[in-house]
Structure formats: structure tokens, C-alpha cells
Length: 233
Image 1 (cartoon, rainbow, N blue to C red):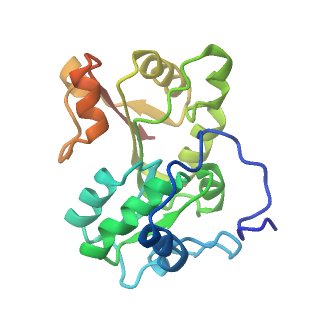
Image 2: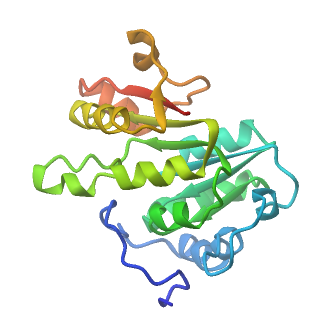
């Protein structure tokens, strides 16, 4: 077992730095005192039904991998209280930002994980999720770093395992080379089909999309995002 209580396994390095500027005192207190109550404990066996992770029963379940500052996760979990959400973010400053927002808008349908998403995907029960979101992941643009991109055959196997048949894997990026990379890798995977029938299907944001500050910056800088939806067959 490692010092942080997570299962002992080498991180697969799909993310970059774990810390940014020093946390303010209140943020550090939230990480120390509030996060443990929301953090999933992967040293325990996974529940037979994910509803057991929440204070009240949920009708469906959704995972967001790498939620950044939490804008999208906060919006989705606030508009759909019948859905149990799981948010993954190893960057401590992003986690602190989300926890700060939850002080003003608490909810009982959100659980968190602050380590490698691959660990969580391996822990979750098979066919337990209705949707997985991977939004604006680190593109690792240098060729020698392509192996660090989260979209790869092994992780697609993991996502396919935890998604229910008919469930959705959603991917958004403003980096065209990563969009093409994702289309190629998911297209080669037998568990998924791309749902787009016309350009508007990938040029138009997902239904209910709240937008993010990162996305607004990308558009200002001339990098139009792509919104890809894949269905688990």
C-alpha cells in the first residue's frame, strides 16, 4: 500500500504536474478535512451497486476524467441530482477549487478521486456507468509524449468495461491532432461507434454544455473545439 492509501501500482502518467501555486490556508484545510469524506477509497472492494457510494439512491452514474477547475462537473451534478457523479482530478489546485465551490453549493450526488483515473477504472464494477466524459485532456503534443495521451487502446478497454451497453463516451478538445488521434483509436476499437452523422454533430457542443474558461480561451485564439460522442455497443 502506498502512503496516500491508494492501491500500490505505478501511475501511468497520463497527467502532468500534481501541484501549482501554494494553496491558501482555507483551500489546504478543505483538502485535509473535506476531501476525505468525498474521496473514493480504492483499498475497499467496489460496491455491487454504485448507489451504495451515495447518501441516497441514484438512477444513473457518470464519470468525468480530469475535471480541471470543476466548472463542467459542478454544472452537470447540479442540474441532474438523480445522477451519481464521480469526478477525477489529480491536480491538487483544481481539486481545491472544486471543494471551495461545493461549500456554497453542497450536494449529495458527487464523489471524488484525486489520483490516476486508470486506477479508478480498474476498480469500478463492470457495466456500472452510463457515461464517461474526457473533456479537454492534456494533448501531450510532442510525438515523444504521445504515449501519455489518455486515449489509447488500454484505456478504451477500461472505459468499455465500465460502460453499460448503450452508454456514452464523450470527448472534447481544441487540438485537432488529438481529435484525429481519438477518432482513429476509437474507430479501431470494436466496443464503440461514433454517433456523428453530419459535421454539426461534432462541431456543436454537447446538449446542456455550460462552456468553460479554457474553451473560451481556445475559441478566442482560433482553435475551434470538437465534441465527439461515442456509444458503447
